[in-house]
Length: 317
Image 1: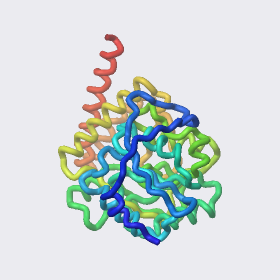
Image 2: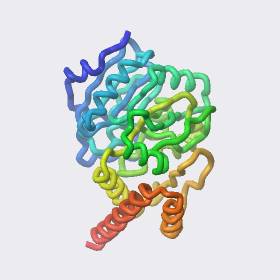
Image 3: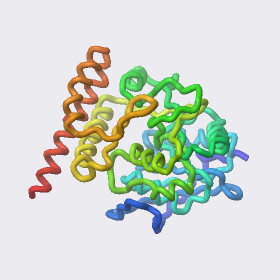
């Protein structure tokens, strides 16, 4: 029987939670905080749906996501929302610590699920293909996207892609719609709580190291939209650039290449090589008419430079 998650959310009781997270490999307990809202399933849940969020609003997207959960044909899932912890990885780990599902399914608080059979399709694929440890869906441009959002999703790599027609090994499996075997998630030590950026590449890497496949599934569609204004979009890229600088200085071993397409790729590319190829890629994008991507990358580069100088100054001080 379907549950009305919008109504449940309106009456949500947020509680402070304590989680031992003894299985987490790279913990970050500094300023740990967050409030939890837990909607249990009737009986043992098959899936533990986990949503880390800053404010349980995200400009109204969170409430729409609750509606899409109510619309899922398969209701054998529990919902765990962790609000207020700025460390996404830690928020997920805290939630997983008391999750009971066979599978962990992470959703971003601004994701949307247009297909009511998404959960059942994900579970069927995982049950049938035991070699898959982690599986994502296809991020597509919704018909209702604004012209600006549509342009960003078409020009910025990894913001959308043509849906696959068969199971494909891919590093485009991402947190906005990602199902994982719960036992394997705990086995690899969960999310890396120490890095502010690069959670997806790190998690995919440790899953692959177990011999499990990381894939994109056909028939799984979700929407994960970029910010709706230039100001918010460029702020996001500037922030990501600063976070990338922090990661390159403090944890370069966790800076993993993120490809823009499916298939094999080189995980570790030296920083000097990434710096030298940057203007080449910018020029190529400009010649292809992808001026939105060029502007975003320039903002990212500025954030990286500011972050690098700032972190180096802190080290000397």
